[in-house]
Length: 277
Ligand SMILES: [Zn+2]
Image (cartoon, rainbow, N blue to C red; front, top):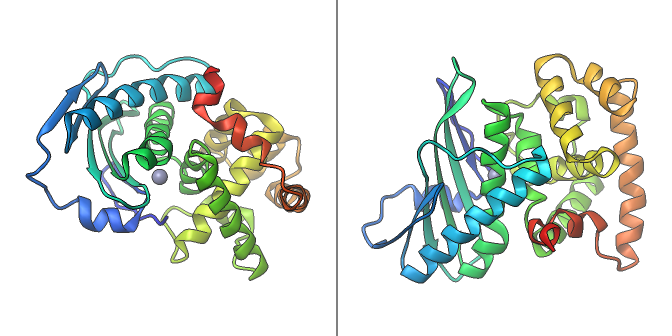
């Protein structure tokens, strides 16, 4: 899972799979079936897929917004297009945003997802819907590490385990960044997998110690003021360096637990579907 960034005049692209960027931005004429819900208009190869994705997108939009913001998003003034490309492969997705910088609001958003329908529903779709919830909250581009790291937490256990492996590899080869550096990355660095993985791990840590709404406040304050001040205000840590130490200490404990065979607690808690049960 990689990422590409395009940003100009408020335009922001979250590209969650490079292969998808290459393939799915090529217009396809074969997607005939459509399905409209209150907030989405889905185009997919079959009517069943379009309806299933549309209904699940609405359900995710509701549960993910409640989980992160404590309330549902207001209905969008225009539906968000979702294009579904069904393949036999793994899930991937791209969401592009156009922000209105005067109103601090999303002006336009478009989602593309691909993979088997099962993987799209379990992985790509909740990931991309999480980006739309964050975009509504921030009204502008969110720091990359947090946007991708926290969106990954909406995916299913299979993807989270994959991220855990990526993080383990990243740390063992010392490819990680000091958090003060990670927080300031405005564009995606060359090691995309590692960048996503470290963002995922740090987001998971912060949410485990402080919950999701606090995480968003921390990111907003870190972006608008300084990350040191935000670490002090929201987590009682002296600065980003202390936060970095705390994350590494947490990681060592978490990895020992996962080596014991227990599924990550947060992975279960983060599943939007699990929260409605
Ligand atoms: Zn993403």
